Amino acid sequence: MIKSHPSEAILYQYASGDLSASMTLVVGTHIDMCSICKQTVCEIEEELCKKHLDSIVETICAPDKGSMSKSQCDQMLEAIFNSQVKPAVQREDLISLEGRRFNLPTTLAHNAHRIGEWTHLVGKLWRAPVNLSDDGQTNLIYMEPGAQVPEHSHKGQEATLVIDGVFNDEHDAYYDGDFILLDADRKHTPRTATEDCLTLATLDAPLFFTSGISRLLNPFSSLFFR
Amino acid sequence: MQTVTSHTSQRGVMTTSQQDTAEKAAQLLAQIAESRSRQAFSELFSHFAPKLQAYGTRQFGNEQTAMDLVQETMTNVWHKAHLFKADKGSPSTWIFTIARNIRFDLLRKNKKRKDDISADELWPILAEQNDNLDDDYALDQDILLQEISHYYGQLPDAQRIVVEKIYVEGKSQQEVSDSLGIPLGTVKSRTRLALKKLKELIVEHD
Image (cartoon, helix red, strand yellow):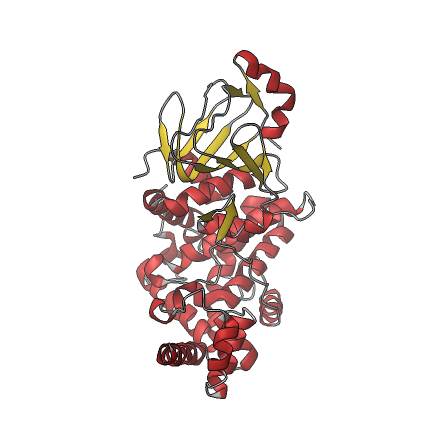
């Protein structure tokens, strides 16, 4: 049972197409996994459709009415009938790492071709970038059992989605489908225990390590980030 | 967020209720999907193009970009009508989500980034779904094509060609329908029959 969801405001922005590409990917992947948010988004889309389309009552393709002329309409129809089908986006449903194979939710599966090489970070942490040519930085993060990310805060927002497995921080435990949004000054120390964990995370500014010796990692925080 | 629908009757444009309009639009989409009816599409177009144009104009504040949004949205409707599922929502909501995606792409286009992500990747609403193949007929993935090529040589030509295009060339059923000039329904039934036959052949041999 998923207990941590995006706010309704975020779902509204998602349905309107107003989130960044990276946030759209993370929220969309959560929605693939969450029937509750899927239902909410359907309702929001209906509402948006009423607001943007259904309420419009103009006639066109009739002489002297509306703003598209009959000939404009005919031209556009002709162009549409002569158009070619765009090639569909190829999806890949599986990724593997260290002998583990993970099923990808639909939205992420359609972006599998954007997933780069896995690199080993410190300890039991792995990272593969998702190249969205976006302002934010989006990564798949894989934590082996018994892994720990040193305590850190964020200069910007961090959104994390659990794809598979479980991780804990000081605040809670997060399972498959849980969506966690952390603001700039919230510190946390994600770690795994006996299970491993695959997450999709997006950051709009670098991590900032806050405690003890791990402050030494700050010059390298781009490792966790880029 | 309440919208005013009483305007419709004032203008005398749509005398039917929203419900009837939705049913009519769903019928038109079905006709487009089944028989590529240009007449059905034209009718759908006259209903939705002005709405899309108004949406585009408000979003972009630019007539030309609004027209691009109308054209690209309706182009997707023309090619992807078979992906509309009446049980999942109304036709206008489906068309709105397509327009929302086109808007996303048009807004990003101006920034001219290389290998930019497209809305089709982020909201895969127009992905060919696999659910048009019944699970019953899905083959186990670990059966290699090499192993079954021997069997599928035994299929009647009509079925073999369809199966080759879908499973070897990776075409969608709609694309096969277009390229062979046969109705989508025929493609689906040939696929089903072929997979059933293959399954029987494989089980017999095991």
